[in-house]
Image (tube, rainbow, N blue to C red; front, side):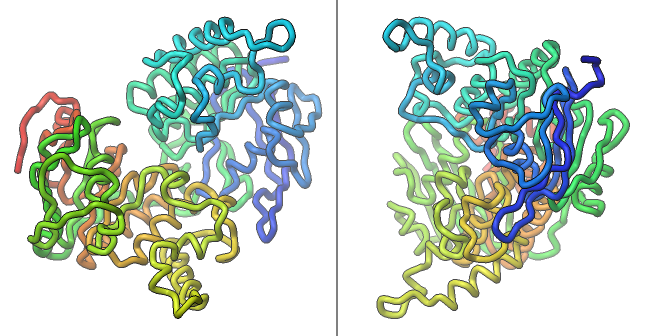
Length: 503
């Protein structure tokens, strides 16, 4: 097989679901030792195409070739046996099992009489974990790991076989910068072994750092393939969304009001300590820091999911006591959580019911829920957020990750909160939808909402924020205004280099 012969190829793939033509004659290939990016807006068909390749979905039309031999993929197990490994965007781990049991799930080493060879299992797993340079071991319970470390376990699954092709679907969404370096080293090692890498990501800086070619889907159709070294972000964006994208900062043109939410000396055990800040009506206050800095834990404490060990929370100048999310919601505080799948949605319910769930009590007359009121709320925010779904009856679990995130945001916006906390608002969302949500956040501030945005993406927090709180190891290091913040001083602050607090 020559270097230019694809290690795998999909030809004319068509996939339909009820009411949706997800893929319309799409072709795609990857060569040995190549990192081939697959890009497109949420709902463009990227994950569906890879699920066809991974044996999760059967195509209605089209053909799969491995080393130019026609192949029918009937299951993920068969795909893995043929050397195609899928590392999913959404974690698919068993939290009660050990790291070793998760990595070798379905293929545990056996001794006589079918007994599990535990010694070999742990030894083989620790070899893989050493390659990934992680701090936990084979016996660690997966449910005790952070989301970032669970993602590393997911990646470890790909290293149990001798793969021909590995599909990475948004692999860095939950990783720290240090963990990203390890991941890119793993990818480079796979490349050196002649493995073809399919890399799905919305993060342009990663795409241009590690890929060789970029293929773009839009509305379920193939739009073109570009050589990474010969193109730029604007050209890729135009293929993805059919237009150029203005990424300049949307400057505030409105006056800010009084302080809506103030936190004084807030602490929560060892998670964060002596945190103070305030956010005004009409302001976007960004929180930036490394994973584990305490940003999400602060939001959860304000929302009543955690009990503070010290400090005060004031709303409109009055101290409030928040012991549960019900208290927070009644006070006009809403939280869009970091993990939409586990914390933000009921995946088996339809779009309308997910959207109206927090306010169902306000939509009832006697024992009956007003169907018309529910549908009206859903229609309003479907249009406002450009949620792509055939209708409100669609099950949320069948939507793309980006559209699921929009359902969560719409759910809390429909509550008309006074303070909106948004944790990782665009995690796993394409560049076009990301711009829409950024504009929406600014619009909400212009309407008088006090907005707190927690983000692990520096361009995002710089783009939407009026002020930025930089955190390190559970403490506020500095609070920057939009005029004084730079990438350099922000990085210094979140790295603990500048131990300076600004009230």
